[in-house]
Length: 352
Image (cartoon, rainbow, N blue to C red; front, side, top):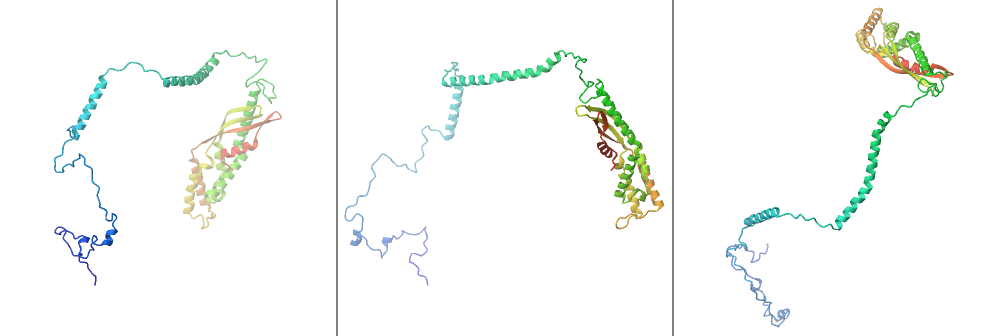
């Protein structure tokens, strides 16, 4: 069972009596009566004098006495108002006071500032004048060149201009440049005129249409009943061209003839026809499961051929291409660059 002290009893702090101090306990030792403890005292038997406070004129204020106002007798709000009024009156007085018109004396700072300004002017002013002079010269130079009289040229002694003989001009004539132009234009015109009706162009168109049908409809023109020769003739009937200009480079012995070439659109206009034929072939089950075209009957071929011809007649599109034909002069004779021309015509006609 736990041991309780006699002081552990509950005490009401408001009704408790005086506390019992340790030395008032009944069993507390008497330190003053015990000699041994007396000797342990720091002062021993010598008399003890406690420190005392020196007298002064200070008197502690009475907490119950009414508080006195400050020295000026104003509340904090009144002091703020007084300070504002004082500042306002000082500003008015400063404005009303006459201004001092006497110039301040220049000291070392003014002299130093003047030196800095002079150095800046010495370095900047010359560059400004130079820039202004260059600007005026650039503006007036075109006007001066217009006012200068054109020098007289003696064409008999020193012929110049496009009609004068150039390096590589074998004619030695003043009209050699024009003759070269005419010769180059004539060569290109002859080449293009022949291509409009050549069998080579027709064969290229037929070959291209067969390859295109095989790619789009999985069958050649013959297997589908399409007349490739008729399409090639129709395409060639819409070919035309116009020679725009010619430039001769006498130093390089080369020339370029620029041409505007018009076609009916070529292979690129057949996609709508292919789509219509594709729907028809699907309706008649023209392909097997591996997309191989079965042999079509004569009636089916006729149907496909008529669809192609009708769609071809509905094409109303023209495609204009601008290109340059290159020519080279060898041994004094102009000739068309055949390889470059063949590649250009394949691109224009849409054939391969």
